[in-house]
Structure formats: structure tokens, C-alpha cells
Image 1 (cartoon, rainbow, N blue to C red):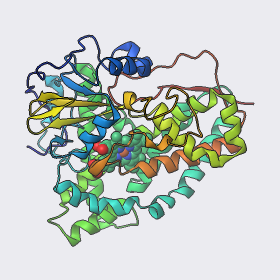
Image 2 (image 1 turned 135 degrees about the horizontal axis):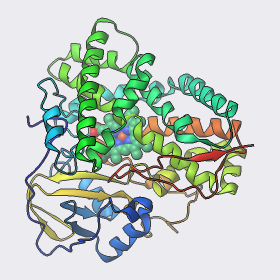
Image 3 (image 1 turned 90 degrees about the horizontal axis):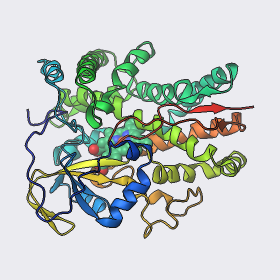
Image 4 (image 1 turned 30 degrees about the vertical axis):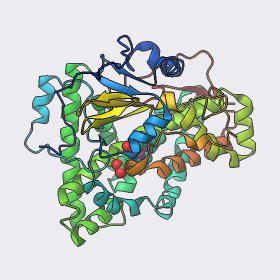
Length: 426
Ligand code: HEM
């Protein structure tokens, strides 16, 4: 089906003629995963645009070119953003061929004009006032997790103790999923980022595919149940919208939004919380300033999104023959937008490799994209991270990183955050 949520695009046009090639570079190289920024800068210093045969992607590195591509959604479609980067293992393909595995592209990967229509139905759920209603849950659950951490031993592993559970539970309550399913849901979602943006082994792909099918079936049952039992959750709002205008927002689209959002709504927030701690706790004066003056926290989070973002790239696919950086680019070319490069551009950000929570233009990063697909959850993610940082600053000002820990980053072209973070206090 043309509008499948995840597709494999096996036909790759030839690289643009005359375009520089970086044969050795891949965003999955160990050195890049460990620290992408100096490598991204060195690559941009050589060429604003180059071809990466390892990925079969055209790589665009400058903020100006990335913004122009986001602005032209007709030439640079977002249809490939949820697709696996590499061809799928046949066993995984077989699992996903299940007749009832049929989520459709709805938000990030749906072209205009349908996308604009669907987005009208989701926008209301993400208004400032609606997001504010999450505050009591985030505070209560966040405090419970902090209590449990403080009741245990210092040091502890923060991702498991806090940053992983809280964002998942927050978006699940927003959607309306019942609490008793949290652990199962988190296990099912866990590896979707590896499926679409990583390079998992064949065996792992099959396992993830099984989880995705189970997850999709769960979403369908949940929407069917909500259809009969309305509440004040986001899924009920979507169903109201569907019933008012079933041709504009179909039932399958409601199911697919729930499937998409329950992933989009937490994985990157977990990493944003971890990256925030990584940036601020490693600079004691910065953390002390934030503890003394929590009004510094919102801009500090913008600076984390610029300096050490939880999404360091995004993708597009050319729909027609076009030009990028002066090169003729054929239709069907996959394009890799390198945020890690653009967010540290010296002509846009003074001393771009300095982490500065008072930077006046920190919010001019590209980490939430731009244009018609601009992240629907940007305010949600920032609000949640702000509350969490305020709670940690207030309750554990002595929080610090354990010295000399080795950080590990998963093999992923887009999502970035340490898999573990050991912290101590007292
Ligand atoms: C730090 C956390 C997050 C980051 C860095 C992030 C980043 C992004 C990016 C780069 C896009 C694509 C933008 C484009 O194509 O122009 C996007 C789209 C989207 N994000 Fe986020 N996101 C985050 C958190 C969230 C959260 C918490 C939610 C929901 C609760 C969410 C929901 C969405 C949705 C639904 C879209 C598709 C919007 C559309 O196509 O209209 N995101 N996000």
C-alpha cells in the first residue's frame, strides 16, 4: 500500500553527478556515535552537501539548506521518515506481512494536503492549556521516582530509575492507555527506534517486528474500547473528531495516530532528560546557578536541544528532479538532514561548541524540524523536561555525575542519548 506507515524503498537512483562522496563516513560509525560534533563540523568544512554511499543518502549539513528543504515539502517529501534505513531481513518482512498489520502514514510521514487536515484534529490536544493538565501527573509520578531513588543507594543508574519510565507513562496517560499495561507497552515500543533508524541484526529485527505487530493490535483494541467508553483523554478527542467528520479523519487514521504518538511521545524525551543532566551536571557552576534560579531552566533546555540534541538528523525523499547545493539531484533520492552539523554552525551561534544556558538565540536550533511537520510535541517535550529539571534541582541539588563513567550510545542515525547515566548525591 502506498500509504503504509513503514515502507522499504529498494530502488535507489544514482548519486547526483559531480557531487562529492564521503565513502568512509556513516552516522553509525563508532567514533560518530560517541561524539558526532567534531566529525560533523569537519565534514561540513569540506562540503555543505555530499553523498554517503554507506547509507545511499545525500547528506545536507548547513542550517540554510536544511531549512530550505523543510520549507519545500512538495519537492522534499517526508514519506520516508519512519522507514527502515537498510533493507529488512526476510523473517522480519514476513512478520510485518500479517494481514492485520496495517497502520497508515498519518503525521510525520503523510504528505499534504491530507497531513494538514489530520493535523487540524491533533493540534487541539497539544495546546498550551491541554499540556498544562499533565503537570499534576508529572509532579506526582516524578516525585515518587525521586523518593524511590533517594530511598535506595547512591550512586544509582538514572535512566532506569527515572528518565525511562516517566516520559512513557506521561504520554500513555495523555493517550489514555491504562496504567497496568505500562511495562508491556514500554517493552514493545523500546526498539522501534532501532527498527526505523538503526541497523539491528536479522534476529533482532524479527523480534522487533513481532513487538510492532503486537503493539499495533493493542492500539486497535484500545481504540475500539475507547470508542465505547469515552473519557477526557486524547484518543476520545480524536474519536469525537472522526465521528464529526469521518471522511476527513478516518477510523484507521485514529488508530494509526495512537500507534505513532505512543512512540514519538517519549523516546526522545527520555534522551532529552538524560542529555540535560549530562550537560548541566558536568558543569557544576551551571547546575548551581540553575538550582539557585530555576527561571534559567527553560533556556537551558533550548541550549541542550541545540548543543546535545536527542534527535541529530531527520530525513526527506525527493519527489521530482531538483537541485541541492548546486547539484542536480534525481527524483527518489533519500536526503539526510544533519542537525548535529547545523546546530553547531559558527555563523549562526557564537562559540558554537560552548554550552551556554544564557545564549540569547539558543532556541534557533533545528531539533524539532521546521514547516508543516514541525514537531507537534515540542511544547510537550520541553514542558515535561522543564518540570523534571525543576524537581531535581529543588530536591537533589547535590546531584552529580559519577566520575569516569563510560557512556554508551545505541547504533542509530537519528536518536541520541546515553543508554545509562550513573548519578550520585549527598
Ligand atoms: C525532545 C523531544 C523531541 C524531539 C527532539 C522531537 C523531534 C521531532 C522532529 C525532528 C520531527 C519532524 C519535524 C519535521 O519533519 O519538520 C517531529 C515530529 C513530530 N513529533 Fe516530535 N520530537 C520530540 C518529542 C515529541 C513528543 C513528546 C511528541 C508527542 C507527545 C512528539 C510528536 C511528534 C509528532 C506527532 C510529529 C509529527 C508532526 C507532523 O508531521 O505534523 N514529539 N518531532
